[in-house]
Length: 176
Image (cartoon, rainbow, N blue to C red):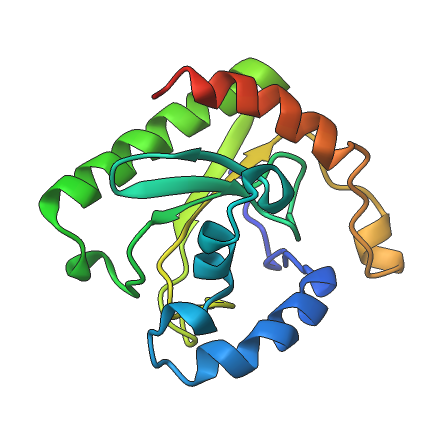
């Protein structure tokens, strides 16, 4: 049996600027729409600019502008809530259904070998924006890490995010 002695780390230093910019808003935890970057994206009316792939009855899907990997999606409620418990059973059911469909669509469009799906709840749980619940769906490929994160503290994403957005937008439109 092969046992690992050291735990591997996932570092995402490129997120710091984004997190620091919105942290002032989310630290207040006032749950006002005008203080949430996700709610701002919903209100601005330009889904393509915000990279919103789809709006549904209770939730929406947006591409992460600071992705861990190409095609990294965020699925979240339209309502400004911080926890799953604050959602209606209908909103929770739709959220789970959208996670499953998003995972399948990413695999269909991008050909990824696997994925990471998760929620970082609260600041202590690793959430960069704890005041608005969001689920990460991160496509993964066999061997999708290389030497750059180790020697240069940089993650290279070799895919044009706008190109991925356009491909996914067509497929997500079929879900409505």
